[in-house]
Length: 141
Image 1: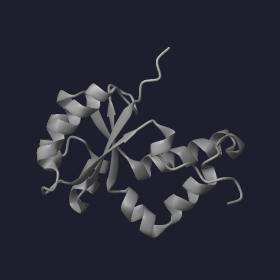
Image 2: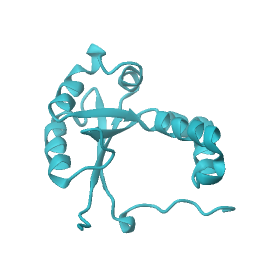
Image 3: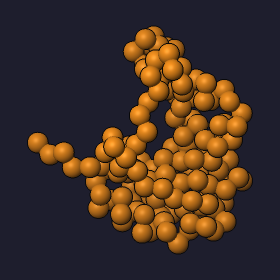
């Protein structure tokens, strides 16, 4: 068994492009981005939409088993956070939310020329090491 770290890239898209990406990955406005993503078997997932999906799933299945339900619900109901998370996109590679370092680095290198341009404001790389990531809020906190 291996405990290799997995990685995830996230992009912050600029206003008009974030809405285009949420509406349709085929939108020509984001073609420079989606062209690179397709070469790496990668797709965009809007963080706000992922949070909303989580809340709907929890409500459908019983919130007791979803320890981040309250925090996530408050997040999507907060207009300031909504603005932030509708511009934030996780990149899934090969259908996976987290992926091997080599895949993350290859995609990161391919996307780097877009960062700071008209479509992509920022790019972040996260790993699965709990020491590098904020811990979920405790119940009742």
